[in-house]
Amino acid sequence: MSKLVYDGTDCVFGRIASVVAKELLKGNSVDLINCEAIIVSGDKKVFAKKVLTKRDMGSGGSMKGPKYPRVADRLVKRMIRGMLPRDRMKGQDAFRRLKCYVGNPDEAKDVIKLTHKKPMKFSTIKEIVRILK
Image 1 (spheres, rainbow, N blue to C red):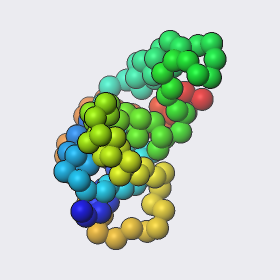
Image 2: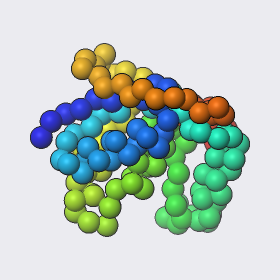
Image 3: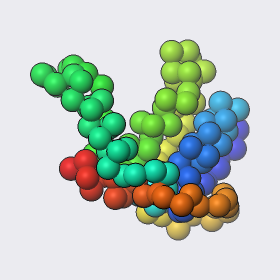
Image 4: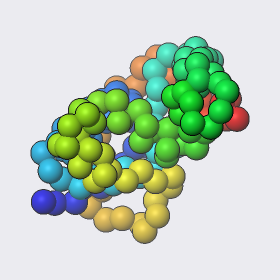
């Protein structure tokens, strides 16, 4: 179908993720740029603790447990995966059409920017990734 480029700068994660997931399920290819600047509402330490808890559930070997990456673009892609029905071919194909980038790789044109009100207490993915390392 068509290729859409979304800018994640100052966007609340849940809102942009739901828009991206719907576009992927419609059959469009989506590039999400500036993943490190996406906003997560709430306390960053609480969010990082949830991710660390899930990561430590399968401690033991490399083949065990849920895998949560430590890089901003891969973490965003992993979290968007939760909004897709990946147990069906439709969801697997949609996930393959998603590309996430840190920064703006090719100075993309025709970028779609979502605008909405920022929450009172928030942190960026970049700050959360810094805690995870």
